[in-house]
Image 1 (tube, rainbow, N blue to C red):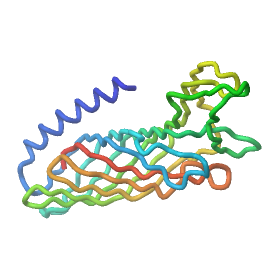
Image 2: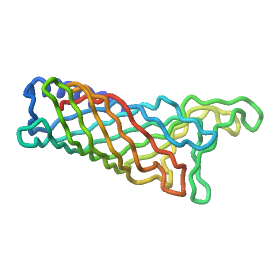
Image 3: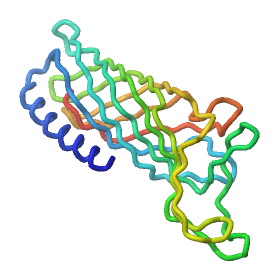
Image 4: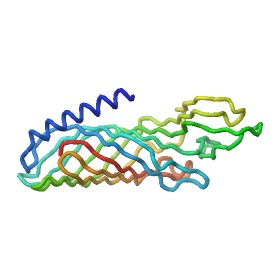
Length: 228
């Protein structure tokens, strides 16, 4: 996965630079382009006692096709891509009687020995379909508003640290997780200069299904690198 992200990142930078050089006109061109967002997720409405890190790095990679609106400075764009999120917390995810919940990682094991962990995250991957209304000015300023619909492809947890029971060092990856919302939806916004933009996405759908999991949802902010 890391190699794939590095490859996509390099490909995006090269294609963005070339297309940015080719598209010196202030008007939009009908074209296909690739892009990458380097994002950080802030988790809203965490359960009592559960703390999510303020730094939760993630990546969006996508392709978009631009449809100019006549010969104006406006255009529509739509496409598809992958949204990859990593939500780090001090909570262990489990489920009982069909309900998913987080429990705070204990400070000591059953033998009263101090325990800790190096990694504890919830990883989510979505197949996203973004739609945007774009504007670019004569001086290179870019602006876009839109929305994104996503389908959940994968959800898993990764844990590396001490076993809460006996304190042994363990590594666990759990993919058989219930009660995740199978889709997401929310508005997006971008503003920047040429192919470097600040980007934001607000998920109006929660990560878990209603009444069977924590009512948490992420807000993504970051830097988008792509031709516009």
